[in-house]
Image (cartoon, rainbow, N blue to C red):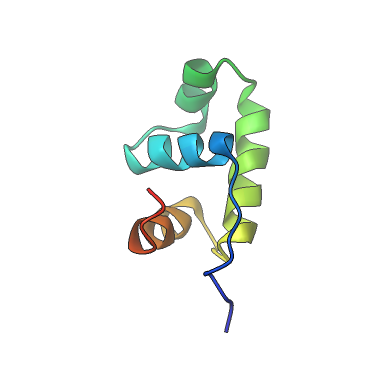
Length: 69
């Protein structure tokens, strides 16, 4: 089993998770954060790896369950 207790997230990853939890899409997050859409997609992929999630919805659900967001 994957240990979610020691997940280290950056402030930027937390902001992305928060925006994802509010239904933002990658292009909307990119505009909000003044970053390239591909950068957001890469960061979402990194978040999914950190949370051992197969998609952004699962990563957000785990972050909520853990009280991270």
